[in-house]
Length: 298
Image 1: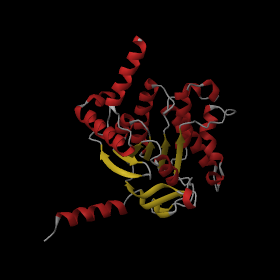
Image 2: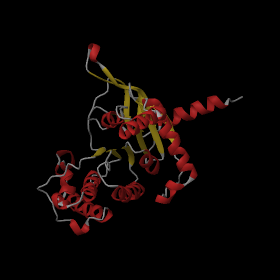
Image 3: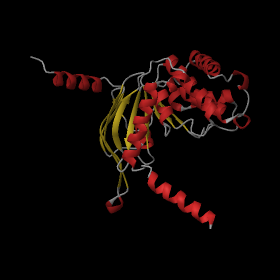
Image 4: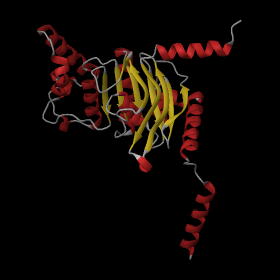
């Protein structure tokens, strides 16, 4: 006789084994001795191929540290981190990163910024003329995909923040990385531009079929973009809960008004407040307001 809990455990183990990105018992510390701080504590996370996962949580919860560790920019002290079946021991061309600050080369045009990764040694070994031609076609395709055709020969300083971030994303996608890691890439943009970028990155995800891990402080952004939302808690940084987003792959801004979206947003926000200790003390705020009113009437 089979037992449901055994079947569930076997299914979870199978999903973990087939994951594109797999973290098992991941620990990360900063410092030594009494001043040592645990940035990541026993992180277990499996991300499937072509999945879009968002990491959200209060400041200091380790979400950017986890992202940078997956990218190979940070080392881990214990546990296992595997991408596509290979242990991560540093950066690699299979993982591209996009940061909040665009890090474009101001002396290069838009098209040359996008093509820049093709100059790196890892991409130039044994390269033929056919490879060069294919890369040029890839850059032109990304220009069109990101809506940058009309500014191909402009310089970064001539572009808005949203346009610069489009260039940064196109550059990251140039080498067709299987994994795209994004650390609050839209945090510096205004609300309207951010919504446009949300729909653009979802479109890119459908076309490129890239596995995306996306860090954000914005719960609404996390829910709108992610197929799953990983909520992290601080002190020490750890995974508190994982929430499946009940939206289909084709999304529109109107979905943010759906009852199930609003309910999940409320649930995630409440959990962030609970895990971070940032509960609002309405009684204390009322007392402060009353005291301020009394001072004004004296």
